[in-house]
Length: 233
Image (cartoon, rainbow, N blue to C red; front, top):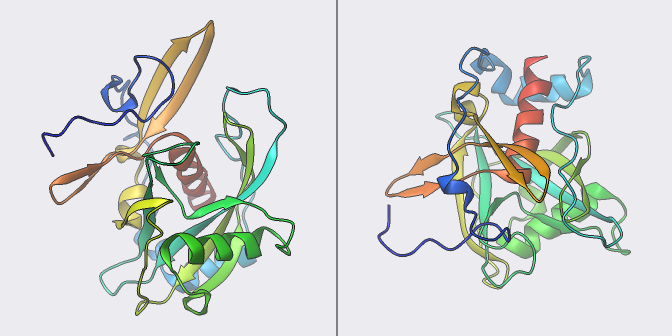
């Protein structure tokens, strides 16, 4: 890991989620079997979804502004060595969730036909992922962030051969994490914080990417936890 000072990942004073003690992982829960992570298995799961409940629906509110609709693309890249998930590190210039690991995505615009269209548009604008490489297969339950975004996670299968072009104003980096790693609760750390009289609980999924630790937490980790519940149901 770099010796450079870490940029805060939260606007809560004197709080950095990377230093928050882990209360433990959920290693007692089974990982999603590898057979369920293949392209056809994922298509079939969304065609005939099981009875399931999202584990994380909403975060404690940190703003009084009206809710805003948003959509993210959950891009499952179909690599020969096993599927990966394409994630981004948000630019430090952004007003919301700067520096955090995120899915490509953002607000649903008035010109977007629906959440699917918004997710594809945002992915193309942020990282240059051409929609011709993406096969949308379904959506997960909405997730409400503490900043009042009502986010629809749109799941897509991404055919390899794409080239990324990052929008430097929005994205600092793009990287891939094995889907099997993210769908194994042994890698899901639990955390808890008391702040301003409220108790906040969250997941993190730290991933070592070469010399860099990608700290996945907050809304992204919450949506990934819901994806785990959906695929393991």
